[in-house]
Length: 271
Image 1: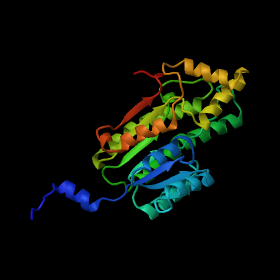
Image 2: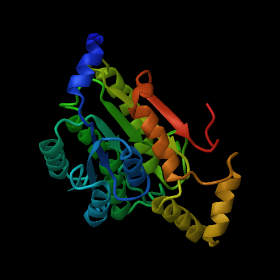
Image 3: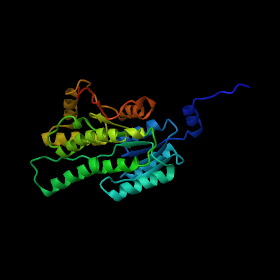
Image 4: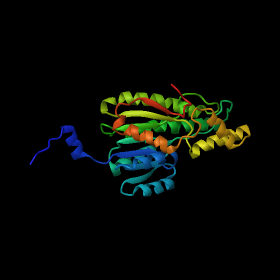
């Protein structure tokens, strides 16, 4: 009988292999849901988090109750963040892959000096930046070597947009967060990157276009056509296409990438 000797690293992987624990914020719909369904083709375990708990329950059932759980998460509330991470790790152990996808948007024009506009500004920053950073801090506290963190940013982290200063500021800030985390956690073998989509065909994007249409007094279809005409690839990006890039980053092929902001913009950003 021939004894096959594997290199130690391969032997460890063979004996200690376990399904990876994936935590996705904003998993109830759109990009987050598409990421969950794409990664579910593997053997991963999923902690799916969002404010829309009922929608999460449906997704968790689709993925299988033995490999997915639905967790309430409000990134504007520290206690909600803490509770979600504790619940996630209590069920499936340390988080191996963190997808920071949850976000919010609303008009915050500079001309609006009202208390309501200030409150909207603070809420967007709290969710898109502050709460997202706190979530990443906690999720990565016990993350093992080889861990992956992917932030879903925006092309509005590359340029400005009138009337949306809070959202634009939050997405610009995420680029700095990615670079800093990538440097600070490199010694632990954790890779940190961002994907910056342009117009993705989601409810949130269409709501934004509808808001633009209402302000201009034109139809949604006209605004959609104008936005598509302004970019070289004249169509909206599918959530499933973003999910494919996430799969690339969290797999073995993503090991040499960290601190990057990868623009998936249909050509609206060219660097």
